[in-house]
Length: 89
Image (cartoon, rainbow, N blue to C red; front, side, top):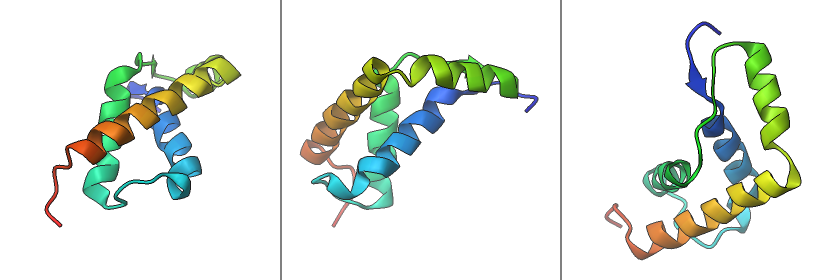
């Protein structure tokens, strides 16, 4: 890993994958991406440059409290995207 990136993107995608089947929302790719973007806009970014930095960030972020914050932000995003979808069905 040579370039910086936001570990929060990966964490939000992983958590969304875990709970995706249980969510009552449109499952199209557009809605999924909108949910991810909306969730990331609610979270503080965690940028890293090295693999060690990524592992450290994951350890700090994946406490039960922080995991709850990610799920809460996803739930809010699902509600927003469901109420205002950007796709045409």
